[in-house]
Length: 125
Image (cartoon, rainbow, N blue to C red; front, side, top):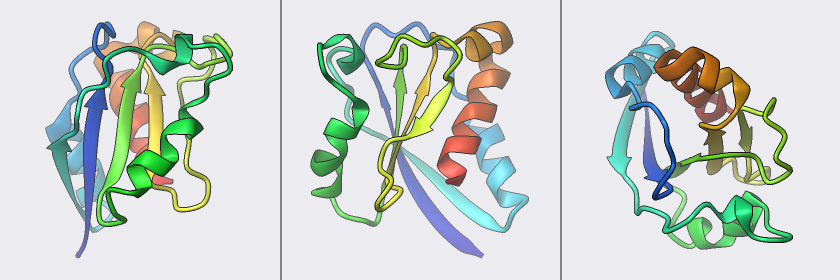
């Protein structure tokens, strides 16, 4: 069985449902992957509200932490403010950083299940 470790980073002040960690581990176990979730460092504010910022700007910082751990950020909204975007892979080169947007229409409408599904999809990249 393959093992994957993901650090979960929450942005302070983001109103997101609790991440169903057991459910997320179960999704990956069904594909033969042991998923280990660890608490990542909190981010003090949603970088998406900064002018000219994109979560891809954080990739070098997370890459310095090494390739053994992936990173999932639970943010509020996509930097373009498009509420239809529920998540994205921010690190296209090494696939080590993904983001879910709790303020997206999909997660708002589907709550914890929407967050779980979006996190599983993005981590699966």
